Image 1 (cartoon, rainbow, N blue to C red):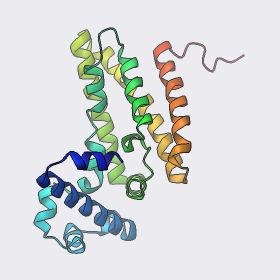
Image 2: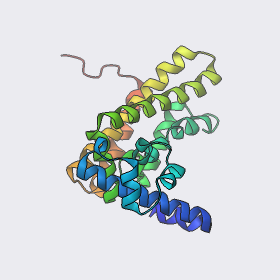
Image 3: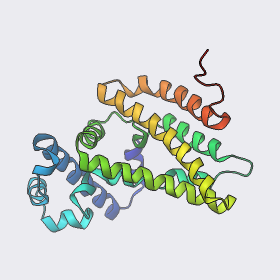
Image 4: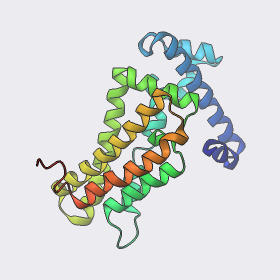
Length: 217
């Protein structure tokens, strides 16, 4: 639904580019699923999609980008949420709000889109070391961007990095759980309520500290 709304707002030129990228990604993912990421060339993707190799590179700089563009497009999302938060709102509250809003919207970027193409993409990333490494690099970059925002406000880069690591580590763990259940075949509408509940609980731990969590009796 979100893609349909976005598509409706585009001009004709943008819509054609979006549809071409979508077709190239779908074709690439189908070939990767059949033969493995490393055994498919860009030339073979172009041939299967009935376009030139140059057309593929006009839309995607590398073969990895055919898979990871949707992931890397969200690299600065959390940093923007922290930067744009209202006066009086903490960084934790901003990241919590951003995550829970994404849950409500069933956002693919946090693993709450049951579309076959999204599930196929997620599974491919998890099963391909080079893609998983690059996806992790995007997460590290996201944390760095959050730290930069916090350091600008506080003047304390080290503590900004500590806070960003906690915030992004918590979010990444929640997203990973959503992906796990999605790949197991759980419907998004079953995952979402648990994602909201666990998200609220997890960010409470960040906000109020571990304290006596898991203290041995």
